[in-house]
Length: 301
Ligand SMILES: NC(=[NH2+])NCCC[C@H](N)C(=O)O
Ligand SMILES: [Mn+2]
Ligand SMILES: [Mn+2]
Image 1: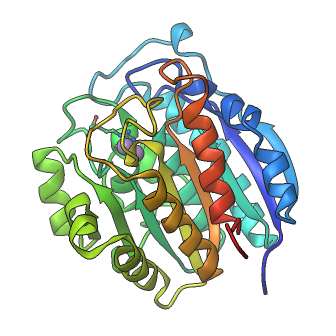
Image 2 (image 1 turned 90 degrees about the vertical axis):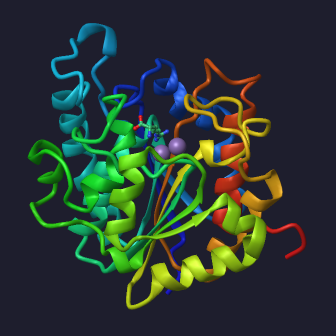
Image 3 (image 1 turned 180 degrees about the horizontal axis):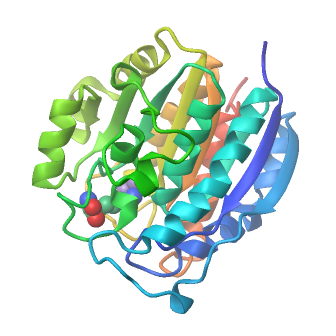
């Protein structure tokens, strides 16, 4: 059965990143025409607004290796039941950020839905650090590890103590910047990684085809976590941790078109859009275009 209803959940969090501004991502994405585009594609769109997120300037960093841990834990505790509930109702939750620390709650929500699911993490980064390996202390560099049970219990226990993802159904696509210890942890994890170099060699079509097959195997569907920094900074300047050598505009659209074609989308995060660093909302507009492709927009249907 195809799902035709999407529920937008805004998470204006910047506490997981080093830079302010990414908290304005949900507004920028909505302003870029998200509702209209989805409706035009025939989706029933519901927007539940934004989750309340504490403002960084009103909080203190207590632990420099886990910056804003209590606040990030609290936000994700609020997020995960919303994600779980949508999936149970056969509605696709579209979680718009905000920094990638919201991935902790969205993956906990997928797990709490009771569905078997795979994950494709489109990202320059592995987001597989812990307080033992981080050099920044930024929790947006940790959500995939947390979902795999690695990290402090204030994060790993959100939505239940068990691991949220299955490594055999988890894929990272577009990677080009791992920290050294993080790389070693990912290698141990059993997660499949397709780097930018793999995309160069195999082509985007083959990479996404294999990625979807891995993520889908034996599951009810796939959670897509899309970090805009996976694109080349020339396409997506409005991100906090840009790294050159990223995906082109067409590669990213192809990937999202293939997500639509697989009819396996269970839920989706779109994160790290930072309007302060952006150029006339270019990155938010790109995000809305990519969301449209993932939800079925075609050039010549
Ligand atoms: N979601 C992101 N943009 N993550 C960037 C993480 C960068 C770096 N690996 C860190 O741990 O700080
Ligand atoms: Mn990320
Ligand atoms: Mn990233």
